[in-house]
Length: 442
Ligand SMILES: [Zn+2]
Image 1 (cartoon, rainbow, N blue to C red):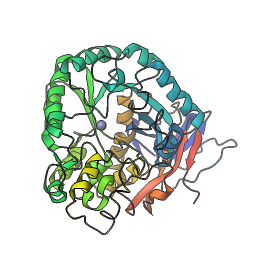
Image 2 (image 1 turned 90 degrees about the vertical axis):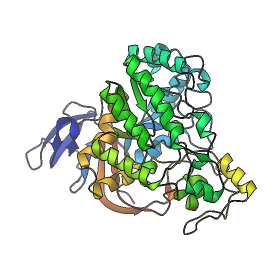
Image 3 (image 1 turned 90 degrees about the horizontal axis):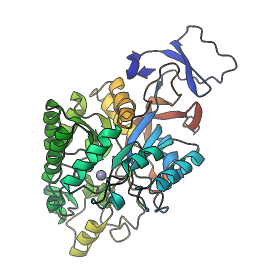
Image 4 (image 1 turned 180 degrees about the vertical axis):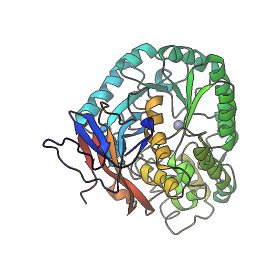
């Protein structure tokens, strides 16, 4: 049992009753079992249910990509008991009725929990703010226009005043579009080789710089989504020294892959922000180790093959193959391909790689994948104290498996990790004492 909230790490027997942690005792001491169902978790980890603070479930609006039902089942299969669903649906989650729709679909799914993220601005247009208090009353626990940056500093500044008063954080997609210019890949050698437009580091760090200045000024909580550059990390460290309430997340794809993945995976390695270069990946891993990065988020972004232009680009990319320079039409298709990758079912395995490489301790992984996201979302979760809600993930840290996208419970298959060998995965995902995913069955 690994529970960083109570600095607990050792062999324990855990009793769950009526949806709550009823007891946790040193293994071998007599726990009162009544007629309990026994789960032999020896050799496995019992951890607070994993929480992903950043997913796109595409519901309402894009059932060909994902629905709340399939997305939550994918989450549970990845070991997540809770996911925070971003607002860029259709309609946008900028109104209480959409928030309620999301929560109702999630209840029906009887799987992982859904925490709605409210838009900051109406229609994600960056102009008119949402009714923050009404959205919080409806169940939103975080505010974000993710997918689109908030270009108008005054709009963000006013939003921070209101969210700060209400006690919630704003998660920021940091992109200066005057600099990113719809760049298809990280500005650098791979973009040049393929003949596609580049998206420079500065497009992110410039906007991080502006927004951290606003955060310092307002004192409100801000959360930097999918941080991808060393400059952003430096700015976050500096802002903390100036008293900013700032947290940040990194995605498994940004700490695992560099830009060269696009040569093999094409549109399935295209996302915003883009995969960066090898040095940047090392900087992200160092920031995971030194604590600058608070948490891991998948930015799960399911897309159908059509949105990814897979048919038009067929044959140009693929495993064991490095793409050559793209012809003009293919380069345009590549630029048109939707951004993002699925991540819910590979996140834990990729994060465990950090543990297997001794970059971090298991307790730090649990902190990054449960305790810190719980705090960001203002949830009473991420801990296994007696009396706590029994949201629990049971992990086999050593089970080796191969990523097989055709087996994903997500509706979408857009991953750059197909065929990768991973070590460790969720065996049981338990929400309020109910098993919502059982990975023990083959
Ligand atoms: Zn984003």
